[in-house]
Length: 184
Ligand SMILES: [Mg+2]
Image (cartoon, rainbow, N blue to C red; front, side):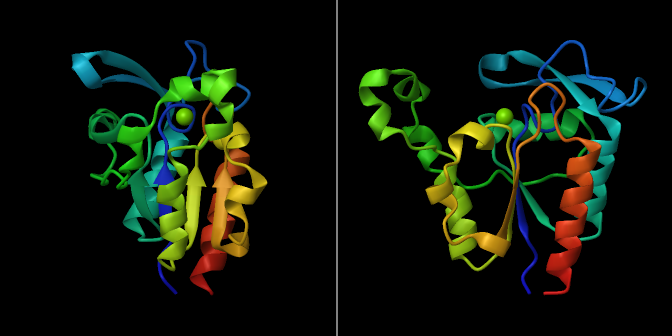
């Protein structure tokens, strides 16, 4: 069985989008602050939970999944990886990013054209015969039931709370799912 592809978002997944981390999710002392440069050289603050970073490193080192960045950070995602001491993961190929326009979604007049730019990359993983692990906080409202029709056991989609990123319970769920895929 092919090793799963893990499409990894940044903000709301490994970067808690808040100044004030939720200590009920990960205790004080587990949070790491850093920053990384994005487009136009803008330096963005990062707030990540150490156990999440450790989990990602372990999954990578043990070859349990092939991790690829899938984020609006696009090529700048590598700066996040360096800032947080993560392995050198590739950015998922996503020609749809260049065609995306978030303002479309905001306009009620063209909402019928709604189409999440991140979806085709995920579908290509499935179509390529690879199990898909997809962690993205926006999946909660962007991914519709019909978008993932037929994915079934081939995919695990996890949508963390945007202000904490991946939680202990979600890491356990991912761990279990990866283990199940190993015995496929
Ligand atoms: Mg996000």
